[in-house]
Image 1 (spheres, rainbow, N blue to C red):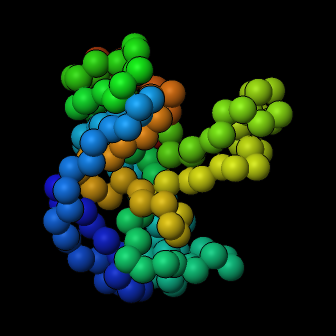
Image 2: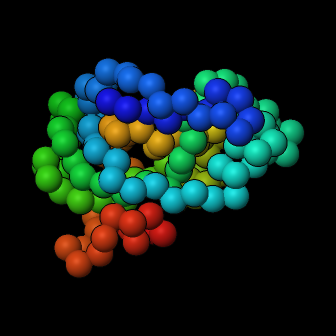
Length: 147
């Protein structure tokens, strides 16, 4: 698959990488559209967002949508061909905050496209099945990035 890696400020390289296999509980998705937001622009132009510097190479993009390609063991409710928007925040799902529905303050949160966590400027990605949001047939992948 093709991956757009940020190698230095103002410097993207298109590289080849293997298509990952979805582990248990996760899905393999084909990324069809990704929004570009302010943090992507800061990483690109300045090499950091606030006091969080880039760790090169880095894959940006955290406003994605696309199609399910394959499901890992134990995944139900999703099949190849389903269209979805992809939530880029990976939570623990079992701490007191997650159990109370306050995922945004999970103490173990990881956010895809931050340093150390590849984002969606790539053709394929794996993520937890619970991080998919179905999109209606009439909504384009580009519009679904706004979800």
